[in-house]
Structures are given as structure tokens and as C-alpha cells.
Length: 538
Image 1 (cartoon, rainbow, N blue to C red):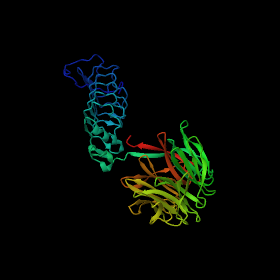
Image 2 (cartoon, helix red, strand yellow):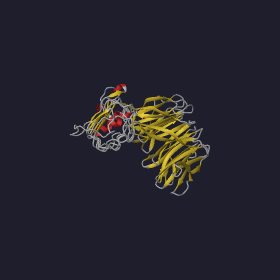
Image 3 (cartoon, one colour):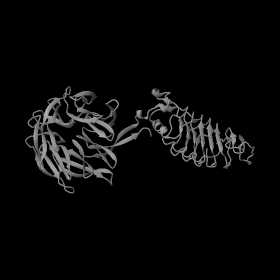
Image 4 (tube, rainbow, N blue to C red):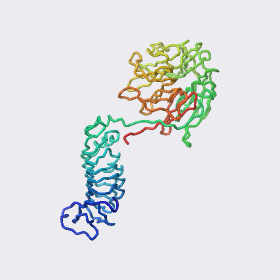
């Protein structure tokens, strides 16, 4: 179309068109039968360079033309009716019908069509009747009908629609349009074959997905990573034991990358836990040797400085630190892995944080997790010597409530909430890591995942997606996605390349409307991934 080689059938369009009319010489191809306002053509005639601009009806029948190009009908702007039948088109291009602002009837029926471009129908502002029936189409491009505000009848029957995410937009569009729509039936997939499109529920289509792709590397290894917001700006803090520091990162808006903002000297650090109280910023630096410290920044514009040594007689070999609020006051709990030390609860008292309670002495705790159950604060401690123990806050102190059955050799625990339930991810270095769900009195096994060499099984809620990342020292780290209908974690993707080398912690942050995942690695650099949301219906 759009030049010599396309067939035109001029059909009667207005009263009086039956009056015999002999077009000027050269205006009607030999294979066409012409009357006043219409002509019937069949075959493959050569069209003259100019065609009567007063044509009202046009048809294409069994042509040899294989594509409708942009601007194919610019020479016949007065068309009111256009019909295609028994043709083969590999593509109908964007703006194929440009210039036909008066077109009311467009019938593209009983053809073989490879594809239709999403802007093929652009500019048909007078169109009332559209038929795409019986064209062997498996899908239609999203926004194909955008701008067609005058439509009253649409016929899509007789096509081979694959009723997957590609038709979701169509299902959402049909109830919103002020037109009668004959949508036809599904040809596939097998489970939906022969089902009428109008009977499909758009809510049952799962057409969102997420994907993580590598974005940036932070050179030094790290044991921990935390996100926090200070003065309205998101930040990341890394615990880097070999570099001997807590490193604070912020976003460089010029370079569109993360850059160091400040570092705190902390040899053998295992955890850097931030706390923001108004204008003040605190950082607890838990260290294997040399004693744990509290750093503080009184106000913006000042640097962080060490202000307090934390429980030097109790915290001999800290392995984890967590922040919690008890009776309206901020506290830290530090899990101690030495036999001589003890896991300690430190709460704010005046300018510093001081021991409130020693927990779990002699058990060599490896991890602490803070959670809320039944409306009360709880603390879950994992250790090298026994099953994880659950404590609840009562009378100004933590009291033992229960332990977790069938959970031997658990290195760490992390929890998340979904659909009103509390779930627990338990990390095991040897054996299967586990997912459990709280039943009101204890955690019960829900799912087991193979996890040889795992030190971290961390849930993360990123936008609307509940993820859980199972890090491995021996294989690719796996990202899982919680399927709400099943209530189970399903594999989403592997992280890498580059591969994570001994991952120990994960954190996510939203910066400049973009979402990022940080992966702190003990034997390799920290890797940053960008989280992309995919629309499978596009």
C-alpha cells in the first residue's frame, strides 16, 4: 500500500452512487469496475500516480501487497469506508491510515496478518465501526485503540488469541469503552482454550515480575549492611572488618552512583547499627576485638565521633546487633558468641546506652532477631549450642517463652509479615534452610530449601514484592518470591554475574525513584543490584 501495486475496490457509499459514471482516462485500473463514487477491483493492478480524492469507499481484495505502510491512503482523504478481505499482510505499520479523518467504517476481515503496529489506527478520529475478525491474530498490541473515542462497534471474533499476559490490556479495556465488543474466544493456552474472552477475570492474570541486574561494586568486603534515612536522605552503612571501618554511603546525584560520605574507624567490626533520633545520628559499632563503641553526631554538618565504650565486660565476641524499641525507648541487643560473654540488652539512659539485661549466658549466640507477636515485643536468639529460643517482653525484661522445634544447627533467623501472618526464615549452613509460620503459640515448619554453605536467608519487602534471598558460599545465591496464592516462596532468579563471594547480609534502598539491593560479601566486594519492575502485559 502507499503506492503502485495495491488493489482498490470502490464500493457504493452514498445515495446516487448507482448513477453510471465514466472516470477520466487513467483514473480506473483495468481490473476495476468503477461507478460514480466507487469501483470494484480484483487482482493486482498498477495504480496511477494520482487517484480521485473524492472516493468514499475503498476495498482491498486478494492483493499481492504484503504490508500496509505509513501514509498509504493520503491520496484519498475523503474515504468513509475501507475494507480488506482475502489478503496477506506481514505487517500493518504505524500510521497506515494517516489522513483518513473522515473514515467511519474499517473492516479488516478474513485476512492473514502477521502483526499490527500499536499506532496503526492512529488518527481515525471519526471511526465508529471496526472489525478485525478472522485474521488469525494471536494478540493485539497494547494501546491499539487509543484515541478512537467514537467507536460504537468492535468485532474481534474468529482470531487465534493466546490468552496470556498479552491480552490483559484488552480485558481491562473492554469494560471501559462505550462500544459493543465481540471479543471471541481463546485459542490457548490449553487450560483456557475455547473460553470466551469476556468471561476471563483480569485479576487472575499474574503479569508483573521483577528482575535484579548488576549496577555497581564497592571494593572492600563486608559482613553487614544497613539502610537508614538521615535528614530526608537515604544512606547505607557497611561493616567492613578487613578495612577496619564502618563506611557510610550516599547517592551522588551528578554521577548517578553511590559514593562514600564518611567512615568510622572500627577494626574487626562485625556490625554497624544506625539509629536516628531527630537531628542526632548514633552508630553502634560491634567489634570482635578492642571493645564495641557508640558513635554519635549531635547535629547535621558535624562528623561522627566515638562517645562511649559499650559493656566491655559482657560483649567479648559480638556476632550481631539489632535495634528495638521498648516502652518507647530505643535499645540495642548485641548477640555475643563467646562462652565467657553474654548477649546483652543496652537501652538509652541519658546521653548513652547502658546494659539493661543479660540474656542467654554461656550459649554462644550467633544471631538476634527482633519481632512483634501478639502485640508484644519478642526476641529470638540463635546459638551454636541449642535450638533458637524465643523471649517475650514482660515486666520490663525479656522472659523465655519457648524454643523452636525441629530447628537444630540454626545460624541466623529473620522474619517477615504477609497477609497478616508472621513468617520466619531460618538459615542453616549444613542441611536445609527453613521457612516457618507463627500459629499463635509457636512457629511451625512450612517449607524447606536446600542451602549448603548458607550464612544468610534474608527476607526483604521491595515495593509490593516480598522477596527472600538465600546466600551461599558454594553456589549462586538464590532470590525467592512469595506467591500470595500459595503462601510459599518460589524461585525467582540467581544473583549474578558477578557472582557473590560468601554473602553475609542484604539490604535495599530507594534512591531517586530507583530501587537497589546491596549484597555484603565476606570474601569479595559488596555488589549493588538495581531492581527492575517488568510489565509482562506490555
